[in-house]
Image (cartoon, rainbow, N blue to C red):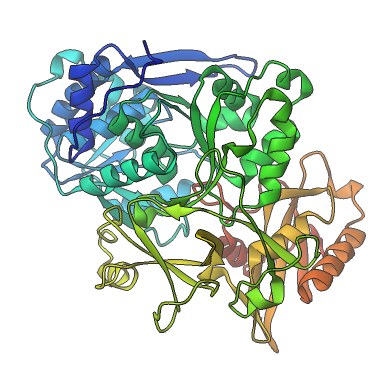
Length: 566
């Protein structure tokens, strides 16, 4: 039965070796299920692969790929979310090739990035599905459709292994893509670290996920970790979640011991969009852990989600603030399931000076952060971004990481690799944070820091203030950034209004005055410009986070000249 705990696997070096192990020892257990929603009112159509069936499909596709490319060549995965994506990814690794997890053309706002990544990765083969086959022939000469490879193509040859398993492209700038070289040992180590951190190494869980598989967290939590531990992974499409968030919660209800992950906006979205009628059919008392990997994680988000679904049995200790990045495969540190959310109220002025000093939680000028726990199987330290001197507890600096999960460097970017991955074994994350009472606190991105009159301001802190000033502002769909001015750095906010609101209905000058007043009172900042734009206008990264850099670039190019401004 699938409810039994899978037996522990020996320590293997690669994911294909784990797959072969489960196919031999537990062949009829369910491995992966994809829940499709072909129509707006669809309740979900389930397709499942057992470990035996998955192994057969992987061996067949791997044999086909081996005919097309030499070991070590790159294979771009341009498959839609689903079982073919999982099969294709594992087949690339089994064939001794290097996977490049991507997505088919047409993803809103991501075509430029896809073009740039393909030009950087130079794949020898494109792996897709029959539905996208003709479209992919325009992208590359060698195209293989996963679902068109017959079972008879499978061979019994042992899985091959180049040192590099896949290139994980970071989700930031569209014009300068950087693919992190993730080795086979990196991904296996990180999967084990994540399983340990969330307690999934000692108890049976089901991984339930809608995060895209081309994203680092989706790939590790929904594919690598289940393969290492022999767990069932239940997948759905991100678009299906966005169309109806209750679908994700139904899957959590249907699988006791569910372990899942989502960014801040998804928890806020569920709390506001799931109806009482939809809540009535949910049973969330079996949810084991909900990972929040946003930067930083807001306690108010966890509180809002908990308040919305406590009536459905959601336990208070399920929310697990976490921290990670592609350069470390993904997982770095996490709060443990079943523990109360650790909240830290910090003095805003002291934080701007690089010190994490306590403040009263009810102080309107306090910065509220959730603790992201401690690392598992790796080390972190806080260092001065310039001198690299290690800082003491409570001092804010750059988060640095060391462990077997840290990637090998950036593909074809040697200088950037030396600067970020370093010669001393410590990965420079570019993220700012501190350690308090054994918890990592992430305060922001070094490159996004706004400096005005010698004082540091965190953009996400300003954004949190802005979005709370008026109900017409979309949560987590706004960007604060600095631009050069005649007398120093000027601060700009570009914010989307909600879909239920039109600019014609809004008193835009009044809204802008309210935003300016709130930011002035809480941060001592004068906003040089506040621009209100239509939903979907603020660009996002491939992982769904707002891209402040691209928003700033578009603002400076005059892309937001039309609309509400002040």
